Length: 380
Image (cartoon, rainbow, N blue to C red):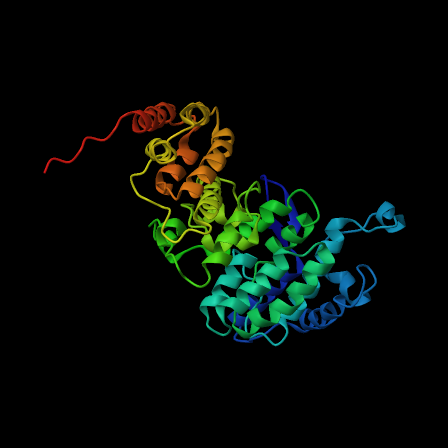
């Protein structure tokens, strides 16, 4: 069997799990449920792969699609792609064991499978999340596979499949530069809110935050742990993301402007809200207004504050803006002054967006005006 991939004319032999699905459907069309004998025999052999080293399990050799060259056989280490396929085959064998339907489900990444497991109510939400977080924290491929080996039976029991072709790609990239993208895809799939699937933007964390909740300290610490880290790569922050993002971008772990802006805004809010008894997200309080309130409260240091605020206003790009905002919210937190985090996210999303060249000057002028112009008193 051949499956076409990539460019026109580029093809490969189907992976074993893809072949198994085709076999199962062929039998189903003939009213013969289950797999053929040769597929069943190979499935039994795959389960030996967890305890066996790659290339040392004779029963698995026919299931491999990554072929070893003479040079690879003579090398001290097998190719990463072969090692990853060995792991994927062993996991598929365990997942498929006694399952009523094929365990390979195209389009269902690990994060989405875990989200379905959480929604299935067969385990507590925290138990599912702990298992996914443990896998995401794996230091190497061997550690990751051990975590997945304990996770796939739970998916099987809930009747949830997994895209093993995608998982193979994830395993192949785990110990290389592609790991961050794998993590981001898992996190975005796992935390995708139902509203996002309907094109509705869910309320961000800083809007939903309620002071004096028992677990606020742990939540804010999770947000602060993402400071200086690439968006989507800090598993502790996954539950707090609500970015506007189509499913296709979630599945591929795309690093979008929306995600970067929300990530940085969450870290800033975590820093700002720490130790505060009241909500620090104050709608309508722009950075300019907050700076004016800070100046009025401190009563001194006007020149230093103007320099700091001026540096913020003249930020060249989003990275510089985030850096200045980090120092700014530290001052606001000390003074107990809030900030409109919806405005902050908008600024971080659009500050250097070439598609919106006028936004930066509009925001800069508005913030500067908020700093320098006293509000008119209300007439009684």
